[in-house]
Length: 543
Image (cartoon, rainbow, N blue to C red; front, side, top):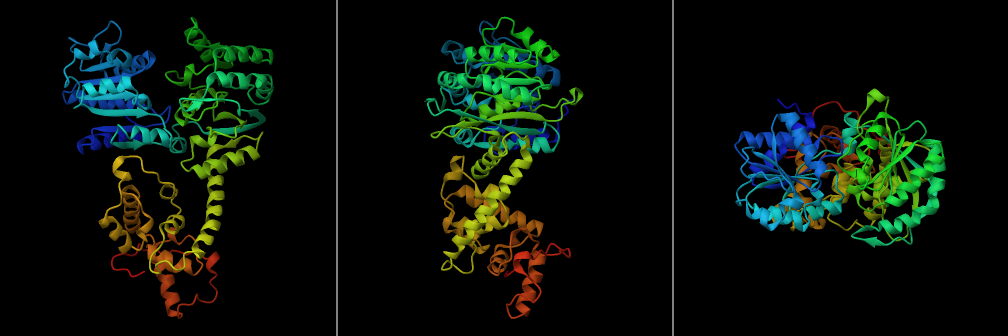
């Protein structure tokens, strides 16, 4: 019997619920190293037990081999292969692993009935919007589809929303680290300024050729910096070009490292990777070859010398070092970042791995650059940046509230409510799927107003749904109502949204009994309630 970790079991359950609810095309987002193959192996086993045929699609042979191997080891299920000259037709196996390059061919697809597969699982699903994948998916219109990917950026998610109907489950990198399933990450910004202003853009990212040219003058300086921080580490370096990767390997060897290089043409690639795993090399250089389909848990240092605007690609590079390896003494991953200078384009930094809010990400990057030369724990850095942003927002909110005096006196502005309850997910919410982008319904707006929220600025159904769900959850948890927040924060009390309903009610009763004046001895800006227990009750509450 396949044993799943708690979050993997939760993902399995969530995927089934989406399919049962009629959302046949759904997504699973798991960080690199969290066992996405194990999850879709469990889903595959469930489908086979129900008598269904399953197609596992991927764009690289290594991914197909890994999927088939892990599926066999985890569940005992064997797979037929649909690749090159191999075909699954006539096989009695209920699972097929298929290369999209093979499956997309018109002659190959014509051999399959449109209902041949009941379920299609797409590994590395961020590739699935390409014509090749869409051609295969269109041939099996009734199949339930599960897309699996590492953490995508918002642009990816909006794009994926063109095909997928929902996000069934997401497990974040910070949560995986906190729960002990991935290695803590320490980011180190090196005080080395590299100019990218002359680098062009192609297909939404920096041109590899231009990057190689821009990077070349800095390779000696980078190697000298790595001497200070990477000795005794097992390091993987990502570079934009094969020739740059080979040159940097030679430079590192001249700086006292034992470096190797692998690329798509390396005939001895397997031997080099095995030697690196055994410790015969301490640095492995590559030109984007190792972003998918290769695992070496003992890697404890990642150097990204291939700057990118694409968060999913950045996550894949860093993900080569996030796996646990306590037996080798690894207690964290060191991630080296640089002061990339570009005045035209945003690019990914360590903050991109952990921050959902763009404002927090920018603040964290600024803080890390100011701390250049000192390794900083990623979660600590994110926490500090979030506090800085909250302080800045509170200052801006104070000015905004001054301008809002003429607004409805009995309702709370959504921004004030979100700030008060410290809900980053609401403040930075961006709709991804079609239904979320639709206008909020009259029923939703009326419900929000009844609960004390000024609804005029809620411009989509997704945000209205999230606010109503949060209000209902707060009611169940016995937290303050929007009207209590409005009442007390107008008097200068802070973060009332984090208080219990009963605590706020007792204080309001005291203030009311004092002629609606704050009682002597209470300083609103410093006041913290001392809860006496009791969840309280929103039902029928005026404030």
